[in-house]
Length: 263
Image (cartoon, rainbow, N blue to C red; front, top):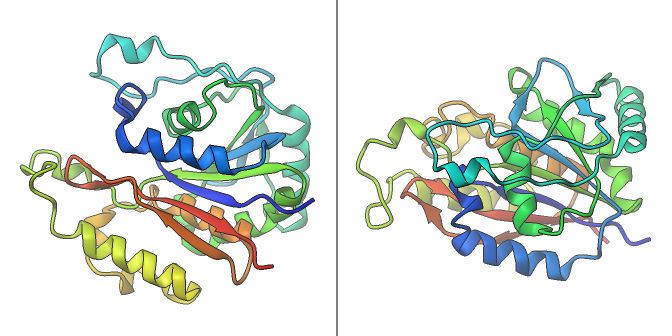
C-alpha cells in the first residue's frame, strides 16, 4: 500500500464550522485527492498533556470547548466512530519509541479535531482517534511523536496535526481585519513555507529563535506544534505542499500543509 500523506490543518476559530469560507473549499478539494483512509489519528492543539495520551472511546463525544459563540454552533455534532483497537496500536508504537502513552477511554473530539474533520469528511463515517500534544516538551518531541507513528501511514491511517500557522489571540482587539493584516503574519507564513520547501528541519525545530516575529505569531506555541507531528510522520525528505486558505481576522493564517513521504 502506498503511504498516505500526513496533513497539517489550520483550524481557525470555532466559527469556521458555520462559516467555512475558503478553508472549507480547500479541505473539500484536498479530501477529493486522497484515498479514503480506514481511520484518522488527529493531534489537536486543544488537547494538551504532560505526556502522550490517546483517545480510546468507541464513540467520541463532540466537545464544545469554547464560549460566547452563537447557539447554532453548540448544536453541531461530529458523530464519527472511535478506534479503540487502533488506540492500542498507537500506544504500542509510542512505547517502542520510548514515548509511553496512556489511553483515555472517555476522551472526545475538541473543536481542533471536529471542526476541520467536519469540512474534510462531512459524513463522519471514518473512525477517529484523538492524540494529545505536549507543549512543555517542544517541537523536537512532537516531531518524534510523528516519527513513531509513521508506520500508520502505510496502514491506511491518515495522520493529521491541527493548529494554526499563526495564532495570537492577544491581538484580537488590535484592530486587525481582512482589510488590515497584522504585520508579522505574512513574514512568518513565508518563512515556514521556505524552510519546509528546503527541508531545513534544524531551523524549523528552532523556529522560536530563527523565524521572523515568532513570538508575535505564537505567544505560546501549542498551535504550531501539531505541524511537527505531521512532518515527523512523513519522514526525512518529506515533500511539503502548502495550500493557501487565506488569513482569518487579519491575524490567523489558515494554511494547510500536505506532507508526502519521499519516494
